[in-house]
Image (cartoon, rainbow, N blue to C red; front, side, top):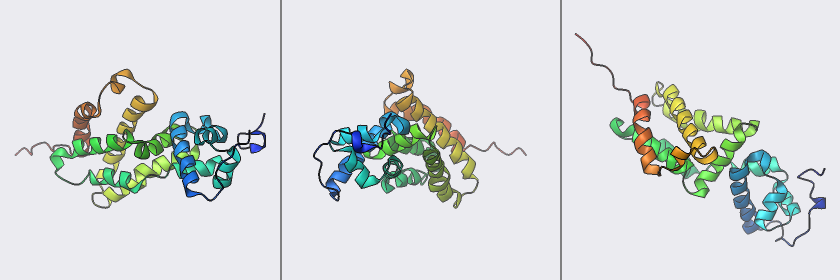
Length: 208
C-alpha cells in the first residue's frame, strides 16, 4: 500500500509552478479546511491536492511533508489571540460574558479564525505536535499574559479554557444536538454566568 506522501502513483495534473504565492495560499486554505474536517490522521496529501486542484507533488514541493503543512495550518492569527486576551480587560462584573463571547467568536466564527483551532483540536487526541500546540495556546499565549498581571488567575483561566473547549467539542466535533441548535448569543447567555463565577467569584461578606 502506497504511503500518502508517495506522489509517484498520483495522477498528474497541471498545477501552477512552485513559487507562486497564490497557489501556496490555495493549498493552505484547502488544507486548513480538510484538517478541520477530518483531523490529522484522516487528511492526506492526496485529498488536500484534490481539494486544491493541483498535483500532489506540487503540495510536497511547497511544504515537504504533511507534518510541515499541518504546522503551517495551525498558525493562529494574531487577531484571534488578541481578541481572547482583550476580553479580560474591562469591568469585572461582565468578565464572564466578554470571555465567553470572544472565545466562541474565535473558535466558532469565520473559517480563517476557527479552522486552525478546530484542526488543532481534532488532532490533539492523537497527534503530539497538535497536543503541545493546544496546551501552549492555553498555558502560554493566554494564561501567561494574564498571570503576569494577576497570578491568582492562572488556574481559573485554565479551568475556563478547558470548559469552553469542551463546549466546542460538543458543538463542532461530536455535534451534541442541544448545543448545535443554540445560536452563539444563546450559548453566551447560558455559559457566561458559570464562567463569571469562576473568573470573578463574589467574596462572601466578612462577619464581624
